Length: 315
Ligand code: NDP
Image 1 (cartoon, rainbow, N blue to C red):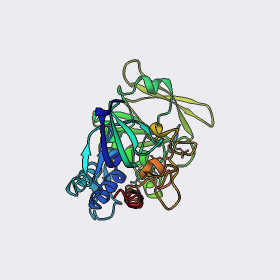
Image 2 (cartoon, rainbow, N blue to C red):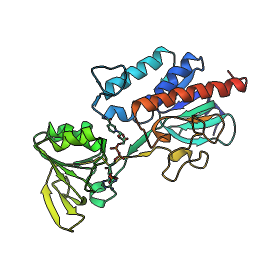
Image 3 (cartoon, rainbow, N blue to C red):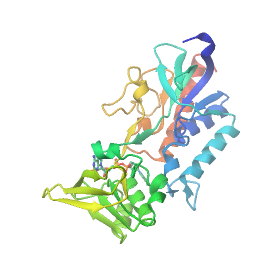
Image 4 (cartoon, rainbow, N blue to C red):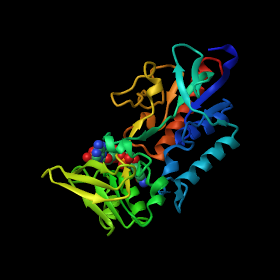
């Protein structure tokens, strides 16, 4: 680590979903001169969603990507320094804390706010991996367009799977929805929408035996978990919507996490086990995972950071 490659900042925010941008807005308004690194997906998970109907302040709803542009603009207007770049390594063993960006540059910070969110999970079968990008996708909103007028399948039974199935049903002739139990986890309203959509066909108690096709998706073999019976369905697109995992790998060894990798914060605060390192948003929340709760926790993190820096006489 050469000295000239190190930049010193006051407050470093890692991640650009609702938590990161809200932390930036609050930190900038409190004159903490925050620097925010956006990561590989600026705007986070909301940039791959469609209509957001439940974020207060948008009575007519808003598209997720547009909402994140609003968040970013507001943070910039308050004076936050928003940069493109991915945090690739950290050293939280002593103050000032060090964060490496894009495997090159090191940043030193008095306080760090982790808002790295969560990423899509995969089934983990060979054919899914092999055909990823060749008809296999974890984002209907990003890739559904390519399957207009065709048949597709989607795996999952949460709100995401239902939302994506609805989205696909408007583009595709038939959506085959593979649900592993005899019920869905999604909210009642979402389930009803899916069940009442005529071109969504639900396979209850079923799993994906294999995605079929040599170079591109041509079908899926669905297995009934109760009877063991297998059925091959011709499709062109295979979508996976089975939840997310927290993006916390680079913090392992420094920050306490639960056994699924979610960062532990002291209840009622954004404080981690390392003083001066705070966490907000989905990376520390496996229960609520909403844009509005992430934004709220980003606000908490900025306020906690401000108090921490004031107590040290650094603000
Ligand atoms: P969830 O964790 O809620 O659901 C994951 C789904 O995938 C479950 O139905 C689960 O099945 C299934 N699943 C998990 N692993 C596998 C596997 N290996 N094979 C087959 N199926 C599998 O994730 P979501 O992404 O749907 O939602 C996350 C959070 O975001 C939730 O709190 C949700 O309410 C929220 N959300 C809200 C939206 C909105 O309000 N507009 C939109 C999207 C999400 P099982 O049920 O059997 O465990």
